[in-house]
Structures are given as C-alpha cells and as structure tokens.
Length: 166
Image 1 (spheres, helix red, strand yellow):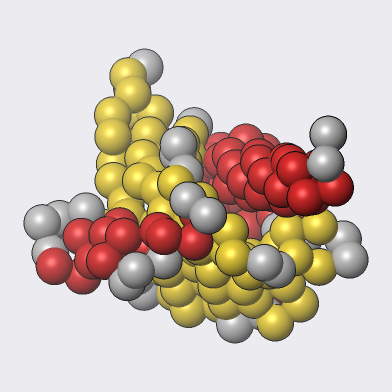
Image 2 (cartoon, rainbow, N blue to C red):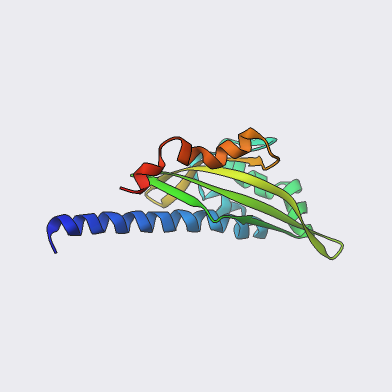
C-alpha cells in the first residue's frame, strides 16, 4: 500500500472515529440527564460551553450542572421521563464539528407515557484533550416554526456537507 493511500485511509478512519465519538456523546445525554447525573452531563460541554433551550440559556458547564440539579428537572425525572436524541447527522471539519438531530421528551403520568416535547437540536463541538465536547447546543421546539427547521437544515444549506465527502 502506498504512503498516499495509507494516509488517505488513516484520514477516513479518523473521521469515522470522530463521527462515532460525537454520536456517542450526543446519545449519552438522554440516559445521563434522566439519571440526574449532573456532573457527567456538565462534562459533556466545554468549560464555557453554552446550552440554549427555549426559556433557559446556560453559559457554562456550571450552569448546565445546575439545570440538572434544579427542582424543575429533578421533579421531571422523579415523575418519570425519557430524553431521546438522535440519530445525529455529524459533519467533522478538523477539530470542530456540527451535528443536528431531533429529540423527544417522553413523560410518565397515571401509568401512561406521552410525548411532551419534540425538539430540533443543533450542536457545535470541539475536539479537546478530554475528547469531543459541546461548545454550543441550541434546542428549539418543533412546532412548525422556521427557526426549528433552519436548525436542522443548516449543515446542508450552509455548504458544510461537502467537507464530509472529501
């Protein structure tokens, strides 16, 4: 195998490994947040990472942790909830990445489960010494608004999709 082919293969493998790591990171949010694992959820973000979900804009890891520890969140999980994210569409560009996915928040009440919220999620991520971390997550309710739909379409409409195919 030529050096050029080997280098190309290594680059492709690294991209696949990066996409898998990011997919796992995003998929771990639901189980961790439903378990109330505040420290582990906070560690998913960079130290100054942001989480912007309607009505709540967290501007660092500490605020993400406080959200999980909040009375509102603890009441939600004590009553029974399941946060489902994904599958995520991931585009890696060197040491940064973009990912989008939809999410469902399922709640339990009176012995039954119902979808309480459907969301559009847009992630900006960075490779750190500790692995991939969320720099910014924006979540908007999927209520038919242009804002939510744009969050989901952005990687393809911004031209970023071409970097994935190289």
